[in-house]
Image 1: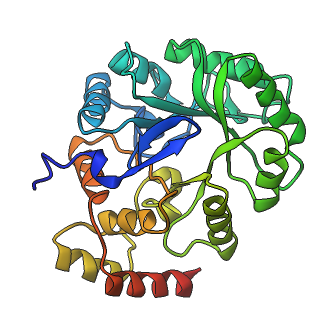
Image 2: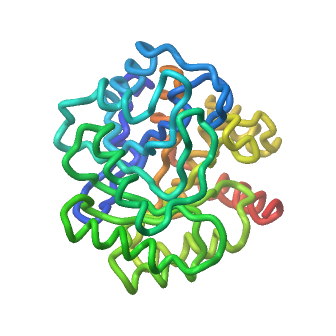
Length: 302
């Protein structure tokens, strides 16, 4: 089997509420620009290339796309690119967006939305994507304060039919418990990868027990975050990658997916070759010995 024939289906599936997705998805944060994302002076990516990457992702079986209205650069918006590339949308495509943060027209960050402002953010995502409802909306937060009012506002929009399912992003275990008391949570999207903190590992475990999808971001980028993938991989990761004939990033993705059947991956890229490599990573089955070595590295660096 070659990388040209491996699809996202090889990663297995998980169900977000009633929506079945392949465990390898696609994150669009890096799509609107070259270089660092979410900065005012980002260099816009070529529109045609971005559209080709999105269409190729779907051709490779990706049916879980992560986006947000605040993913944009001058001239480019992730939601607008998705709409242009993929509308009319395939019936099995699940688009997950997030609300809470916002940026003004110049790209500068605004204060996080109040409960009353969240409806406007949901409606903006609907408008940009050309949808009459959103499949999944994550409430992204900063800090440890109560999320009851904000999550409750999204639950009201769910009851009104604007949102199908709800999730959380950048949260702690007590936030998940608080949200579950208001409305069902289908996914938690947090930073996670080799060396993640014990608290994040604990949250991953809790999600598994509750049948909630755990969706890591920056699982490849790591400390590079919005700047993109770092090359500062452990020698252990490089050794396993060389033996496998794959990249260190693919090993990191494969290890992440091995953390549980409820773990999904949403690596992002604007490069078709990297896209194909990410999809192939979903088919890698690490041996017990490889997992033992990588798990020990994870515990050492956590």
